[in-house]
Length: 250
Image (cartoon, rainbow, N blue to C red):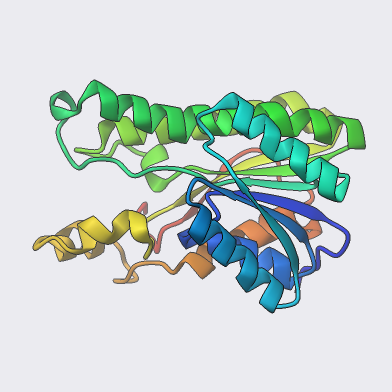
């Protein structure tokens, strides 16, 4: 089991789903944590779960679309822990299942500002800290939709393609500074983001027909990939998009 004793991890979107599962696993393995999210109640619940398991964590309410809040998130992490070793930029919103021309400008802005701008802003403030301390690991949550064209998920898909691209750019630009950057691309995972799709009458066709394992993934399964990528076992892994989709991409 990978250990993160002495390490500090930051998880955005830590109030539920993949973010919560990953934060808990980091805490179980000895990392000290900042859990960031817009939803205060759920974010604090994640922190309490970590503490009950014997870990150390704090909550910072953060909207990753707002630069001043992202900067504060990183500053508070440094003020409390003195460093930042691992950043899991996970905060995101799901797409509306509709044709491209049916998507409103408001929805476009929400998707791009949260899914892409939020990742960029997070790295903008995380990387200087990692440069100063001599290295770190950044893991950005994209999507399987960031690896292929997703019909009726055009803007969501575009925002996630952008996350893959900016992750690879960071890997190129900062690898020489001992900062590793990667993207992960989950498929259909059992989270709040897939609730609406799971409730549809055609859910089987949408969610299972193209997945050889014939089930949705669990948040904890994605968290295990994040844990590995953040660990010393993945010390030569820099750049790339790591798919965890039950085989829906093959």
